[in-house]
Length: 306
Image 1 (cartoon, helix red, strand yellow):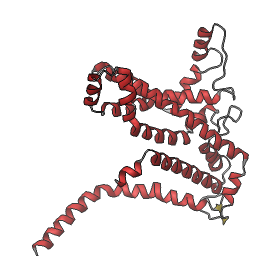
Image 2: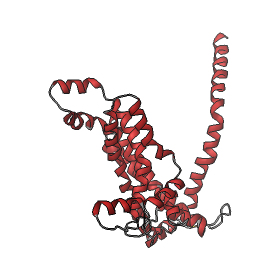
Image 3: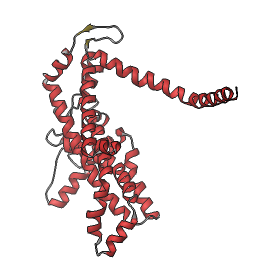
Image 4: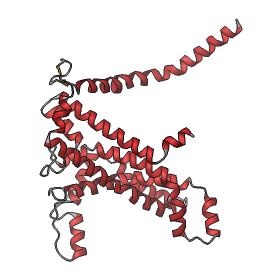
């Protein structure tokens, strides 16, 4: 009888705890899992109006996409922009190394906050800022290059199809390097100081300690940043959409289309929800595959099994 009463009290207490989660669970199911399952379903249907069925088409949507030149271009462009965005990892690591050398005082806090500030600025604001910085005539970057080279430089970083990927990368790296710096710095400061002290006693200078202690102990951090940066790179939309004049065509000259912009076109500009859903599933599979390969290469599964 006593055990039964104890069980009821324990169950009542646990139900109170779970009651705090019920709203989050319902929201997760309604706003994430159900739409995700619906997307999988629509990817196999020829449907133009949501919630009104449509004809089952099997893998026709996927075949059409893989044979569509615009889709293949957006796929390749997405990978190029995602790979270029990886520049923020080494830059963030170098900045973290310099900041870490300042010691854990107010000066380090100042630089840490200063470099992270661009990360909290909205994508729209960043584009507006860089439309001035990267302007073809009178842009700050071109003026700097003109000063350094001694002749006038007029590169259309955001208006010329030849350079737009580099301009979009400069914008993206500037906004997100602070995040990479912060994660690198946190990982760097978690390395035991005894290792550095022992190396210093053995005669290793600061450069050798950086190469043979800091970098090898940052592998897990680099793997995490690689995954998150690639995922963010594959899902770029806002900044590229605004650069293109609030259009998903990937202007200038169709040089900046991405998978997400292609999906947006088939969702809102000329609705074909079956095609849009198939594109979303392809994006999901690519992101999942890249994440799994990276985790495998970094020994994540081996560590968990051990």
